[in-house]
Length: 228
Image (tube, rainbow, N blue to C red; front, side, top):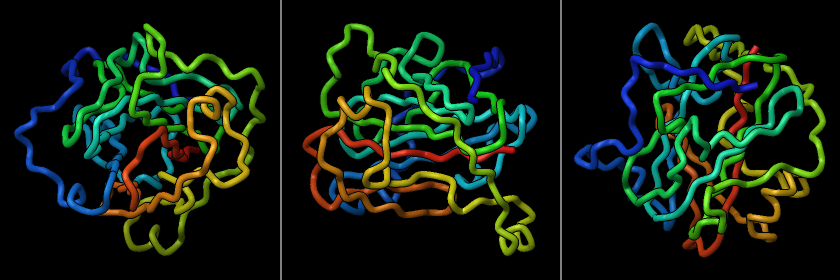
């Protein structure tokens, strides 16, 4: 389970300064999204490999950037099978509008997510829509059918462990939602019925999700967060 924790010493930040240099990956493909995972080490945040197997108590957040305008919704399925909307909400930020070529963080407030619960893979669903879903207070609602607990256990890639000293599970990180996979019904209702063909790439520790064609409707993908 990803739990929210207040970090009073962190700045309250939704939108980072627009003067930061544009990422090279924003010049590739029609519509693109960039996402990276950050972990708090001491008093500083550091970008980590999206496949890093996290430990109990680790505090994490996400960086997010697109080259198109829209609205962002994030929902988590914990290793115990519980669904929870992570963003937008009061504790993590309620303004879910995103503008092209600007950097955002999730949570957008001074909170952080803390890793807790049974070892396995948290499935964090990212839904990006061209228009708000219609709620005055953005909310996806609660799925009507409960999820089954996830039973897969993360495993270290032996080669990467020897070379880098980090426990990396290459099955973690951003992924296309497999065809036929059962996703929360509230997300299925919000997203297009047709499956989109997305291209997943890596630039160092940043994942890039691209579509060869312009996105004219909602798109959904998942970020598998591995932890002990």
